[in-house]
Length: 169
Ligand SMILES: CC(C)(COP(=O)(O)OP(=O)(O)OC[C@H]1O[C@@H](n2cnc3c(N)ncnc32)[C@H](O)[C@@H]1OP(=O)(O)O)[C@@H](O)C(=O)NCCC(=O)NCCS
Image (cartoon, rainbow, N blue to C red):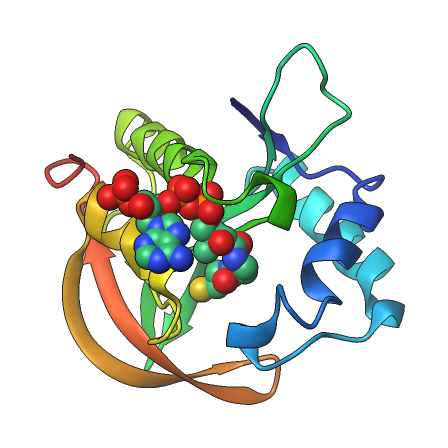
């Protein structure tokens, strides 16, 4: 498994992840197809400038054209405080094979090794067993159940955090 930066040509993979009702069931439902090319372009720009880590998961380095999903760390402000957040998605045909967990571990090890991002937060939907499973098995600490706003929706989520310098299992 390898991670590489999102590129402008990754629109199809984004559409399969973000415009699909099953993939987006825990994120408030599918997003419209129209905005995706712009979203990929913005993410690729930010990744290229190293402002955020927008990564595609490549299961087999010998087949770099096949992508299994995304894992992302970015920064935003919560009540005036800078916050680092991680998120992930794995396409259906690659789920349940440990790829999500390995991709999350790989990116958090990179954060630790480069001294980037500090404590990293995750907000999986309360009912998303696989995403909460990733948090638990990677070494995140459960903080609380809370509501977050995502793409103009309010979602019921679990708040987890991890300090990659000390907590990675
Ligand atoms: C959530 C998602 C990223 C998981 O990726 P994955 O590659 O299938 O997960 P993994 O195979 O790495 O499994 C991770 C952990 O969760 C556990 N797990 C996986 N599926 C599970 C399920 N349905 N129920 C309970 N635990 C589950 C695994 O056993 C593993 O824990 P372990 O290491 O202790 O055994 C993927 O299913 C997905 O993208 N789903 C749709 C979109 C989504 O929900 N995105 C996240 C929004 S918060």
